[in-house]
Length: 122
Length: 154
Image (cartoon, rainbow over all chains, first blue to last red; front, side, top):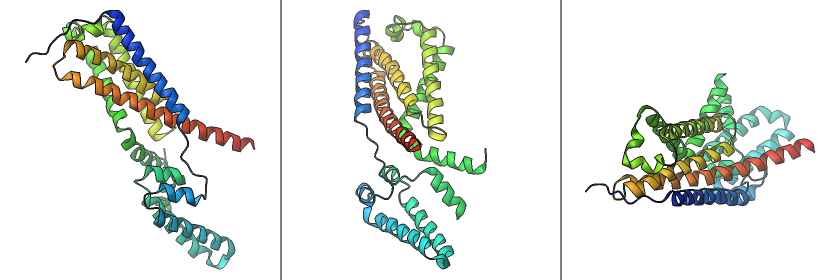
């Protein structure tokens, strides 16, 4: 079957449709801009973190583990080296766990720079 | 550029590309069609392009398609690897959507029971949605910049 050619729209109709489409896009963009919110959680907010993650419990445990290690590093100088390594490993696992979950990464503020840094430190 | 910086940029592209796949593909399509309009002189003499030809000459469409397609690719590369520029991506996607809309009008009038009537309207919808997504990212970007400025001022 041959492609069919309809009678041409008048120029004014073509312009009207184009302007209507442009107005629709502009209105849509203005509404989206007005409604968009930053999903990034405040640092250390475990409740927001766990609600955002697909596997909230396991990752929250990792976050708690990192928090404990950080406290241990601050309090006990003799354990510092071992704790630093453990902290890095736990952070690394956290980053890897969220690598395919952009929302989770955004929620806890994991950036490509952090992942590259961990690669370099290992 | 150091090796570390290269790793970071590559990691950023790996992170952002899946989210912006349609933007990349449609930007390449727009640039490619613009190049076609440049090299294929007389294309707009065909009945299919009569709807677009009466709005502007072929060279103007070629200029617009190449310009918008190239600008979108630059914005995607910059946004994906170096600096956040969702505002540019949003403007590029909105302009591209209007280009696809003209092709959709042409297809509806000149290829009504052909194949392309299914292509351009969907390209238009895809780029309109890309513009909405990018402008949402722009808002988040603006909020973070504002918070950072407020933090520095405090």
